[in-house]
Length: 517
Ligand code: ADP
Ligand code: ZN
Image 1 (cartoon, protein in one colour):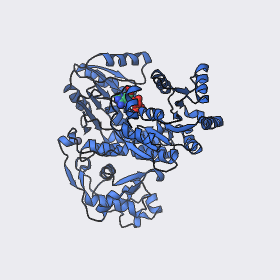
Image 2 (image 1 turned 45 degrees about the vertical axis):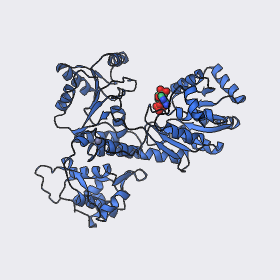
Image 3 (image 1 turned 120 degrees about the horizontal axis):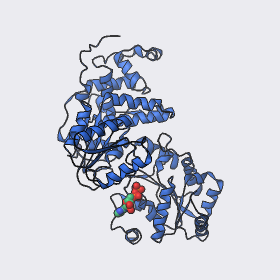
């Protein structure tokens, strides 16, 4: 029964499975439909390559990245595995070899770009070839709300039905909406065996701070880590240049990096960062894809990242060597406004913009988390965990107040309007604002109308953000981000539970009496 285990060492050269891999491999070998969510670098490809060798017949692998397919095929061939790819980058000889392997049944793994599925010949060809498993890499490409949407991924569901074989989907994108879309589109709504593993990076210390004196906050953070390699992410190109100058001024060795630089200049920075000790790179999000430096000791965000996924990816560049690493993420009201505006002004369809607002909300919930940050982060990714002892909130728990009454008022506004409206309109109702929309819907007649005047708009936003962060309410992707109550909120609504909210983010606005308008 150790054939998977023995292939692991004989073909792939690994002593043992990484956490999570063995369960996924077992399920795929057993022919179950599976969805595996693992972070980038977690070792997803093994989870379909190894089962492909254990199962009879051909495994077809759908992947959007031609370069990556070619690398994997080369590595497999070097390990003695009969693998091939059909991509636009093929030489004639490569394509001939693939068809010969399909013909005589020797091919075990066939990589294919999704565009191939558009041709009617492909399904027929795969049918004849005796496909026994479909593996889908980067399965989130099927999500129309995501940033990597590939329309041809929508053909995979039909292929699975036509071939009537199990499907194993892999992705590093863990948010719940994307997962639902993957299940709907690839598995026709029938829940696959789902695995989610390995998102925790326990050696990275997590911390957020409200922007107070932002430049000084970053300078202090860097000063306490002088001589260590670090990255500062900034929201604008200008800021990377000015902050880099300030760091050099303060005696650090720093340089800047952004997408507006000439390619050779960017290569120079990348090469310096890789080889020099203690260099700080002040960069936009353009920096990082090609960075493979294990001993980055810290990552700071001078501005709020775009989403919880982006945050996770960016801080995840620190401490790849497993030694302790530190992070600091600053956030302020300007960030929130700017990010919201960027989303609203993007040319994306409305559903996608609402989903982006949801991802931003999740990050804001994390920024204002009450308990352990890592626990909140991993909960978002669907991974259970205990308080970590390695984040700012485990170090120093925040001040809180009894927010039960406020939360009940907000829940009541949500329920009395049929869980059909977003934050802005709900706050209008709580504040008793007679907007056109409020009047048109008759919401000025609700008992909830105007019951929340003890807080202002900003404070209600903070309260509702915290409610999202605790998963009491969720933006509904099917209703353009309307807030819906979750089951977690029921005990509160029934008066069986109370809730503490963070004080700092709901601090009373200075001298603003609650006047009627
Ligand atoms: P992903 O597709 O999840 O980003 P890969 O499948 O490319 O990740 O794997 C990332 C790296 O981890 C690769 O270099 C791979 O060889 C290595 N790896 C995968 N599984 C194991 C294992 N069980 N033991 C050691 N290294 C592994
Ligand atoms: Zn913690």
